[in-house]
Image (cartoon, rainbow, N blue to C red; front, side):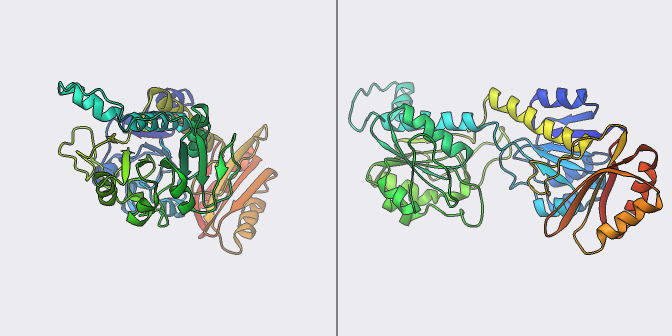
Length: 403
């Protein structure tokens, strides 16, 4: 059976080409969809591809049109637009692209550090208005300055490596112990980074712990005329406090790429933020990972994950499923089985296999507190009967013969 893929939000063409080559039927809608529109479009769809503007809610997943859905690909880093728990409970495996736009975001951050250090945003705006204002006041080299990184993951660590090439000293703070790259130095607390840095750049996910992470108290800890950069999530920083402290002269500027409330599309007008018309502030419309190279790499990465899951049952790299990756056994049929993680499931599965007089060539199971995910290779002649019997078990969430 050919599986149908729905790609939204102008996902890069390379993803469609790769999926078509793998044998999928691909439909496209080059825009984000609201909840009701998405439910309507999901009829007969097995794999959904989205970016950051389409929300996959519990209501969407509960809809009758989502009953065939096997997997979702988030062609971006963030997955907060998805109800990951509800997707898991319905046997829908979710993948994202945690690596592919790392370099693009890191390069933007370094560019903005230099722009803030030279007040290039203000000078550029003045020139467009016909004002010639040549001065060195407040302009500095970044060489010898300290860059503080909050969140030392894929992007934060790359920013640290690039910053050292410019002669900067790099400090970082992360809630988890991370191996420093190059000469980057870890700090024990967030406050330590804030107090010591000339520039502070944020690279944290959106979690209950990071919402409001940088408020007025934290901003007041920063060095006088230091600058803050946020290319992580819009809820991490108190923008009113940030604007106040720049206007007062305590902070030297800011570069912000993400906001608590962002427009749904490029046609939206009237966007407002407290940082507008504040001196030495660079505002960008969530474009940290928006380069052609990054979008192509994301397309390839997520399309590959979706293909491996649909064709081989490989869930490695999923953000909401137990990780299973089993090498194929020649001459067999593969069955995937998502089930509730309760006692007795394997007993029932083995009974089904025994009743079919089937031989298991390979089998791999992984669980989390809510679900179990089983992949097994059986004799080719029994896969249809075994799959049908598995679907009749009360603990089964999804079962499918892959070949």
